[in-house]
Image 1: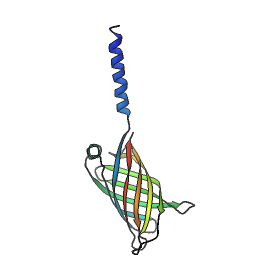
Image 2 (image 1 turned 180 degrees about the horizontal axis):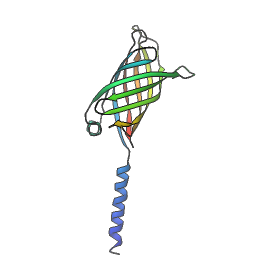
Image 3 (image 1 turned 90 degrees about the vertical axis):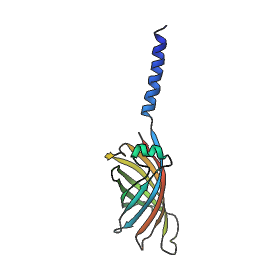
Image 4 (image 1 turned 120 degrees about the horizontal axis):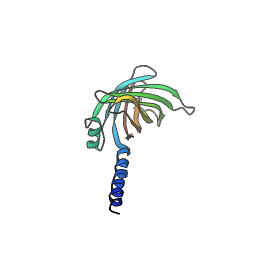
Length: 164
């Protein structure tokens, strides 16, 4: 009986520890994106990212806020007129993210300056060699405006990224 109790205690601790080690870590993220159209199908610009959980974000990515570059490309349209996009996002010294099959929906009419409101869903996958973002996935909701006259686009986003 003396030998069984320590084995049960250590087994229980081992199960709890292995559950904690394999648990998914998720972070809420938010930021801004500003791009300029370089042709009918491509945009380039800059992006910021941070989290309301600043300590956990800094532990994961080395800084409280990260900034980088973004390149977007229109890859198609849906039968209902939404735009399908792909985005390559790089944060120097941190890593890269790629989002495929983003769906942008025009949600209103242009304002007096030609800005058209847009909402976009962006599923996030990671490149295998991508620095601190390796193994992270997620979903972002992006809102903002596009302007086909000036080519200037401005967005903010929120979402969650998770490391498995």
